[in-house]
View 1 (tube, rainbow, N blue to C red):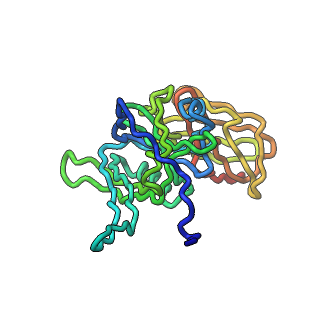
View 2 (view 1 turned 180 degrees about the horizontal axis):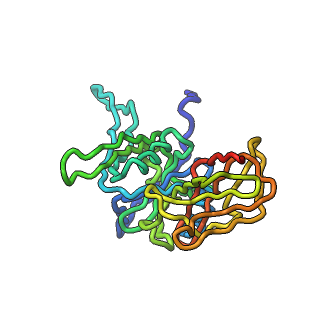
View 3 (view 1 turned 30 degrees about the horizontal axis):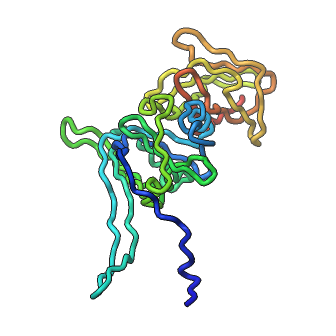
Length: 293
């Protein structure tokens, strides 16, 4: 009998001898990645330099630490007959986690629902990172079929912190068992932060010769200092780049106040690139409009 539907099984059975079982620790953090993102090999997967490059390119998004978690698995379904038991639906692998977050960070989480970031790297409690080795030796995250973000849960009793639940559903429940890569990176991944949101606020009345903006970061608006001209992107109303002659930062409490000097600055927008400083990265989420008078 020929049946093209069933195909031919070419895989071989694996050997079962083992003196030690390498049991994974609970997941306490994670990063989302684009489907196009991959680390070149296991060495790159361990490297902070490679992680920083992927983070600055926004190919990988570092998420918040997990407060508590629970499995959201669903067992396979079966048809049971007189002499047989047939699997009719494959089991599902899922993880439901709790984050302690304010509105600002919860809003950031919501922006990744149904986005192009549908792969996940998990960070375990002992500081390891979990991914999937591909046939070409590159490392990708586990593929997700769903990334579900719940509503912000406000506290109703004293001592109950604001939080939200996130549920991840994995596309293949057996990816880690078949091709898992669990490595110890050369940095403390549990202290690894995402890109801080930067905010630019136009100060005063822009002119063709001067534009002043104040830069802050984070949900609490901390001063963002140390920026240079190459960290900013200015465009005119038609979207064409315009480059001021210079920018200077203030001093003291105004160290995050940046004055751009030019001769023909036009009405347009200003934003930053993803800026990498010694201890953190920063970047605006959207351009800010300004009008030259």
